[in-house]
Amino acid sequence: MNILVCVTKQNTVKHLITHGLKMKEKSNGDLFVLHVTKKPLTELANEIQFFYDICKEYDANFGVIHSDSIVKAITKYVKENQIDKIIMGETRQENPRKSTMYKLQSALYGIAEIVLVPIREDRHYKDVI
Image (cartoon, rainbow, N blue to C red; front, top):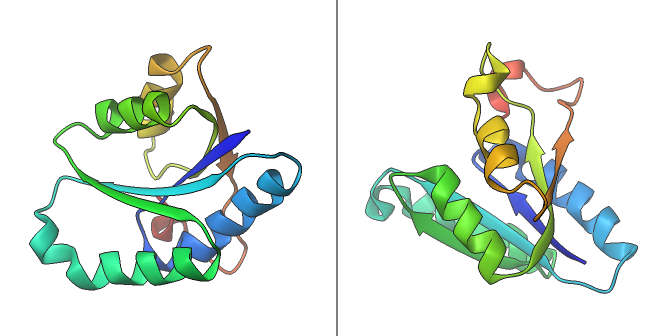
């Protein structure tokens, strides 16, 4: 089973990857970590390096995609890498139907399962995607 961890914030990446690793231990697949951004990659050098270093520490494949459509980029990545489960943090959206997670569920129905990771008690709601 291939597992994808979607990351957006530095302060939640380890928490999300840990959940991905626990799921991976039960399977014979790979762990992928993906950061999709609309911002120019040149503005994110430090953040990308941080994610890369964490992924290296956890022996996870790391990718960065620049795209105007986060949902389309993740959907394409999931299909290309035969991802079975996607780990995401809870949404910040007040209306869940407007969230990336909800849109991904529709785009990937029958292809991959989305697993939402609850916010840890020591985190603020705004700190999770």
